[in-house]
Picture 1 (cartoon, one colour):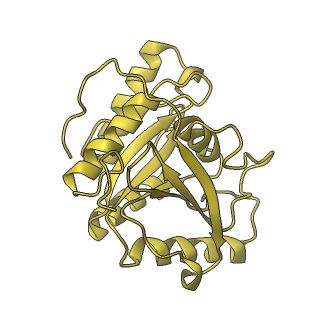
Picture 2 (cartoon, rainbow, N blue to C red):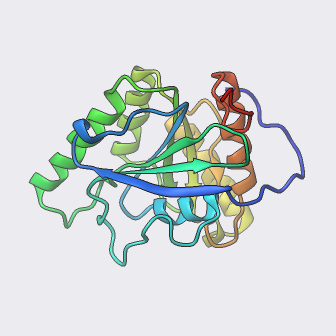
Length: 220
């Protein structure tokens, strides 16, 4: 992936953002759009909060009172500005929730496997991690799996407001070293908005590489 362009430009909220459907199996997946961005992570890593802050909607994705509530794949249709192609933002079920029954965890795993293995449009997978945690076995296996599937991916270190700046930088270094990502992890705070513009620019750059940018006017 290309290096992020350094700019002071601040991005406004998405022009349109709507929930489309929740899929319980691959037969329910919607027809692909020009691009998809999926979010993966442990059940308490802050996926829903990141989606809301990133897209610029307070309640687009439901933030559960307890982890492990997302049991389906949720598809959101997003248009960033007038005249551009819509994309899907895809919220995948969280993993690593110890209180969930084993059968339920296995069903979630199969659902995520079906999605990531499906022959769909170009996409980017965002792997979210709480910046205060060290990478676990699940993250190591998932990064290897994404590489095997040739799915572009970016590590996102959430909740960066929970650590002092120096500790946050050290944690980012450790995550980068342990997971061997292509790019350095991006620090994100759903509370302060830190990392939002950088995430939007990253998505813009990756989509442009694939010729499917949602920031360029559509042909229609």
